[in-house]
Amino acid sequence: MAHDGLGGLLDDLHTGRPRVEIVGNNRVVVENHHGIQEYESGLLRIKCSGCEVRIVGDGLALTALSLDELAVTGTIASVEYTTAI
Image 1: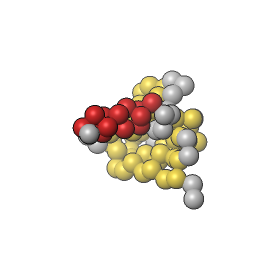
Image 2 (image 1 turned 180 degrees about the vertical axis):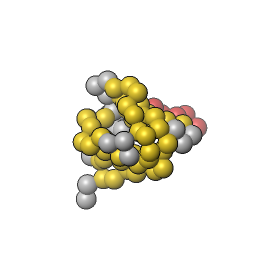
Image 3 (image 1 turned 180 degrees about the horizontal axis):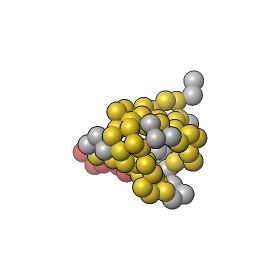
Image 4 (image 1 turned 90 degrees about the horizontal axis):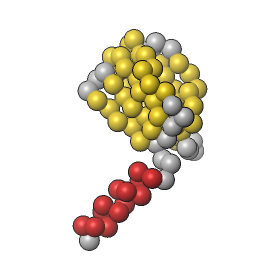
């Protein structure tokens, strides 16, 4: 049964769902995104499959951007995950 849990984890990593990694309060990495909806020094809204990831903070800066991954640094106050109802 322990293997089933690992299989579920591997499924989560490969289905195109967003993966958000928070490192302390100064770095966030979002994988499997579909673009940036809004970008200001205090707010970053990221479109993902079936949801939006919203990063709020101070001095936010995109430090990496590719077709499916982005990294943000600055003073992170909150990371929100919202889905369409």
